[in-house]
Amino acid sequence: MTPQRLRIATRESRLAMWQTEHVAARLRARHPGLAIEIVGMTTTGDRILDRPLAEVGGKGLFIKELEVAMAEGRADVAVHSMKDVPMDLPPGFSMQPFGPREDPHDAFVSPRFARLEELPPGAVVGTSSLRRECQLRRAFPSLVIRPLRGNVNTRLAKLDAGDYDAIILAAAGLKRLGFGSRIRGTLTQALALPAIGQGILAIEHRTERADVAALFAPFVDAGALTAATAERAVGQVLEGSCDVPLGAHATVDGDSVTLEAFLGLPDGSRLVRERATGRAGEAQSIGESLGRRLLAAGGRDILAQLSAMP
Image 1 (cartoon, rainbow, N blue to C red):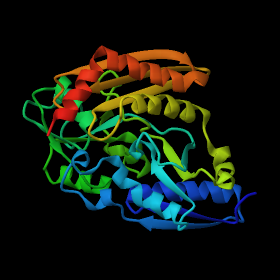
Image 2: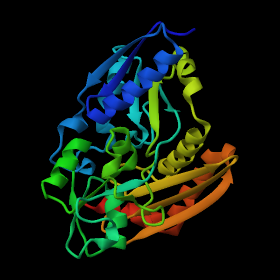
Image 3: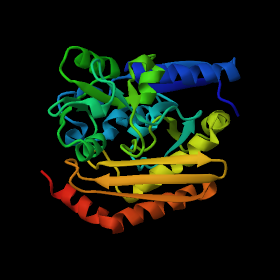
């Protein structure tokens, strides 16, 4: 039975609100009589801006309050960027993608330089991600990588103020907010694998809410579901979190899926990368198998080193 009212929990950042309004508009178009209320919340991850996420609890800081609101009956669903969702959901919660995937790649943004390769030695590049830091340091050891936190507007403002020579952001967020013109280019997959689920919108709800699952079922894109399943399966095997430099990207072509993933150390001194191809219907097992291959290729030692780091 279709619910008459839907309360959508969301972070209050500009990007999160855009994503939520997008979901709400699609729902209203399909269900004109559905009453939708947007429940904006400021999460712990939004409040702590002076330290890298890996130091203060990881990606879960962006969604914990939203899950509490659903558990307490103050919201029915939450809208997330899938890349922000931890690999394992709390018991009693389910998640599904919403709509097709936006550009999954990382974007190079700079007022002075057109490409990463043009940056001179000592140039300062801002990023909030250990995944990006690992791959950038390995490919461009002469660059200076500095932390960059805050919402998209804040990060762009810091770049424009001259705090950085360039910054790396998710292309999807820039495009959704109308900042596509700031993108000088996207990082190739050969250079930088994106975050797991990057570019995919996700709807989270309590598993018991079959009515909510049915409401969102028509918006599930098969390609996004296959990619998310394969990529998150890698992360589940490799204990993917903010303090693990890990990336994965699945390319779906009809009934075929090609998955690439890497695991490394933040300084780029060690990195293992693997690739697998199979049928889309086997996305979960492909991801799990690739994760085990990464562990066998040196990933176990890398995870042990990461665990020993202060």
